[in-house]
Length: 228
Ligand code: CTP
Ligand code: CA
Image (tube, rainbow, N blue to C red; front, side, top):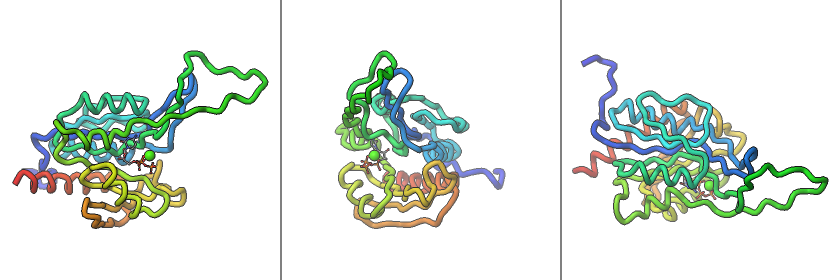
């Protein structure tokens, strides 16, 4: 065995990952989006593939390359992301790293909205489906391990604890995305692993690839422990 080979701890497993932002169309040329680059989600997908898993990566619009050895399904909107996730199940592990748009325009116009000398009508918004909560609540076909991310700018741990209870997932990876940290779009991340019992493990600031590898090692250990 080559000394540098990564142990294939996820051989035989199907891992589903969401990553990137969503685009919510206003008209054919305009959309609502957010600052997510997809780097952290893509790094998790790459690390899972390196650990021997079959990986499906459902990605919103990103400019970074597809990770090696991963099946990528490209989507734009939150609703398309939910449909792609449901189509990709069953999975042994689902990691919801995407920055899903919370709202979309109530109406998407078929033709470009033109200036007509007046201010436009206010943009009415409706809430998108919560993909993580939907999959966590599935009676049948729920992946045995469901992991969410929490993007917070304030009270990171308190908010993450509330989120894990509300969403019904098994673990939350919380990160501080306030502007000073430069996490969104940046190359490094400081994450806090929040468990269902509220306990927290904080990792040092690491590059997103290393965070991805460490997360995958942790998920593999949790899956192994559950298999018993
Ligand atoms: N998420 C999702 N579908 C949504 C919104 C969020 O699957 N419509 C997932 C994200 O991928 C992430 C987790 O839920 O894994 C938390 O996302 P976050 O934006 O931090 O939480 P929200 O519940 O949207 O709450 P808020 O943005 O108000 O903090
Ligand atoms: Ca949100």
